[in-house]
Amino acid sequence: MAITALLPDTDADIARVTEALAMITPRWNVRILLALSGPPQRYSELAAKVSWLQSGQLHPKLKSLCDAGLVERTEYTARHVTYGRTERGETLLPVLPVIVTWAEKHLETADRPLPAIEQIEDSLTLLTRRHAASILWVLKTRQDVGAMALARIVMPSSDWTNVYPPLRQLVTDGLVDTEGNGRPYRLSAAGDGLSPVLGALSAWSAGHPLSQAAHHPVWGHPQTQPAPRPWTSSQPRPVPAALPQTRTLETSPAWHNRDLFSHATPARPKAAIPAGGPRR
Image 1 (cartoon, rainbow, N blue to C red):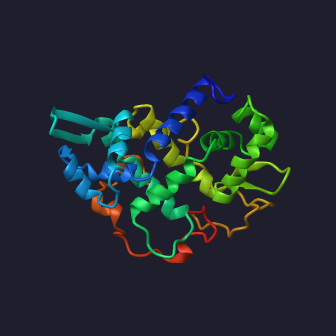
Image 2 (cartoon, rainbow, N blue to C red):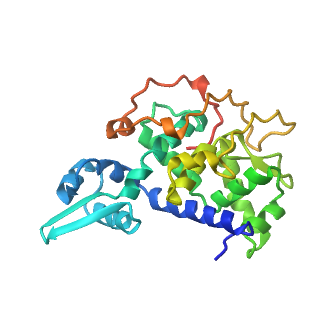
């Protein structure tokens, strides 16, 4: 069933990415997947690795990850059950450093250096806002779009004014810019910089190799730096610094649990990230 007024292939792509985000964004899901590194583990072994979860929280999380096809439960006997990542869960891991790269360039500066896992969780929260994927897709393809026209594409069966709450949230999050009420909306530098992230999520959710992200019809083509605009966001922010060369998915580094749960790199100078980047 169509969820937008976009072409069927695009609509299906947005639906897959939205579903993928719904699988991995809930609190602790990515951490549990990372803790399941190596051979399958018994429940008690895994529970010791995620000891911050309160009693009774791990089991429903594991069930949801199993239902999503990211974790496999193997029952040898009633007392011998193991959990391990599926192939689909394994192929998700290379997407994570792509998300961290975006977060380090575009999320607002924190008071302390953040572990990569927190960068991932903050970024996923922004992308899982209601209608966020659909709005980002439309703004990427059509650039300046008014609220009414955007609503007719993103939520064709709903009252068009219902588009304002998600739009305002995306403006607050720093992913969308507008001159003000009644003016068109367009992607901010941070929203446009999501190309590698959304391209990778699209490839993964469709079951394609991550190398296919570079050929995504919407997010795969490198974008030139936009010319200065005469208007600013409703949340004024300094012009972002020039972005470093984008890392290709094929050369994404191998990540280990210690890399994601600890901040392995020196604290970033605050000037390197725009002070008004997307909210955490």
